Image 1: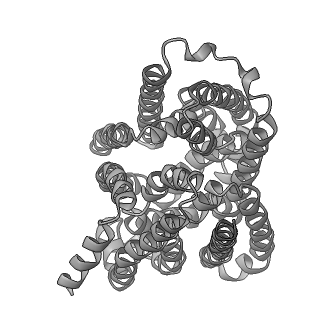
Image 2 (image 1 turned 180 degrees about the horizontal axis):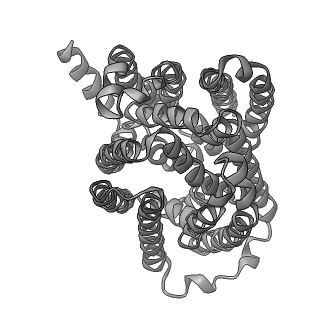
Length: 450
């Protein structure tokens, strides 16, 4: 078996494009792996310290800010990768700098709006999701991480374009190391929820500021000290396509928030903090499955953008198929292992009071395995200029999922949330994959005819 795997990987690495993707992903993976290990430890310590109810409240506080922030953002990292990458490939530094500048302004505006929304909605968030109105102050305080996050997505996109994945990797590892250190101190000091919230805040702030500063340095190196003076008026002809892309990805992000990225909030609202704590634990364990695959979309997106701009359709198809193959080699065995040993793992790490987590974990593993195998579905569509398609598919999936919540959750509890999330992934990712290969077939045929 192992010689066969070595043969598969040696063939895959013969392709220069895929080799570059794997190299860049490996920088992120090394940091992500270290960060995930530390994240698991800090999650276990926080879970044991707080208990299922307060652990669920912690999840509500952190996810509330994340949801509101993403609602007001425009996924500027995707816009930067798509358009700055395109102009860099064409040798048009001035337009590349102008897009980066425009993206930064849009994100700053979105961040200010997000902070205002967090402060205004915190009382409702505390009452509805944490079921404790007295916690509104901590919903507001945690929201201050937005101030460090004002240009994070724009900065992250620029670092991807210039292959500065090591910088992102170091910042990721530093965030987790700082947060874990603080959580360990808090655990042995027997501090409570307040101290844990502050520890999470410090880690997030360090991460966001590090990436933003690195990107500004990179912009100066690439475009000179006066890049920020580039007039936005040179984007006049492209303004419509840029704004369409930005609002499409924002709408898609908003749909994703409702459909899949606010699960702990949904469980808290319908079933209370205890079951939210179980669900948060299940999601934390699925990180072991997503760990090596999560860096691949970031590393793949810039390369797909370049190859599609060059109309190298064979290269694009090769990267997608081999990427799925590599992901499956890891994902399928890990899912089986976590399914077999999941109960033991939960009892040993989080404690026997978290054993109800297991059933939700098994269901989630099925959905995340499918997502892993086709990890490239969204970035491939964006590279092809299909920003609207995933928004439409995600919206229909969201409507179906939310409708089913009211029908199934009263009867099946938090297990219904796990099953509906897995079903949502099968529907949306499956539709995206079909559209990607259909698009590639049509475009390559047009090239042949020409």
